[in-house]
Length: 258
Figure (tube, rainbow, N blue to C red):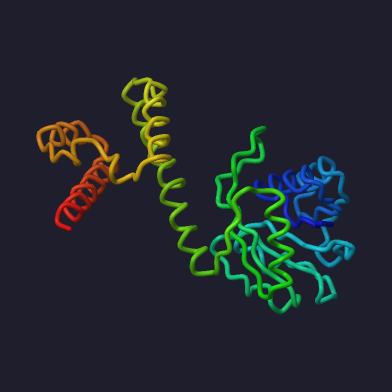
């Protein structure tokens, strides 16, 4: 397929690389960020433009990969209802595109993506479309760049996006807070990396609930009191500790009572 990419950030770059590597042709990169846009266009062997009013109409599908709040301002003026326009957001309805083409949808990568990384992780794609023909084309493109493609409507995609925030963004924030705590206490954060890796690997084969450990899961109030006393100088961490411990205890109680 001939593809035009709107955007030059993390998702635009990585999705563009996957498309380029899998026998499709990226013919244009449109981006307001001239430096990043030209760099991505050069990498993909595509033309560069900063003008959304002048998309290359030879493209069969236009992929809008910008921030959620910028999508409305970055929709290309294709002047033809047979072209397909998709966005890559997990939290925006596909219908944001309905006044711009007769064929539109979503190509959402359910993954944490960094364009600086030389390794591209496995990326499940959630797709949607407003009609069968658009769905077939989007599904064809998605299946050529990923082994995991799932049709998901706006509601399901939003729920999975929230889920991704919990397991990725919030978890990473806890890593960041812990790293800062270790620095202030003169501790080596890298000593925790093996347990971080082990925790993540366990849930590949097991339910997270069945793998829950720690003082809250054991209702070990004595150890929890020691932790809370130590965290007196870190009120934000102390509050998180209390809230998360309470959540673990309540979850465990719910499971035992069912």
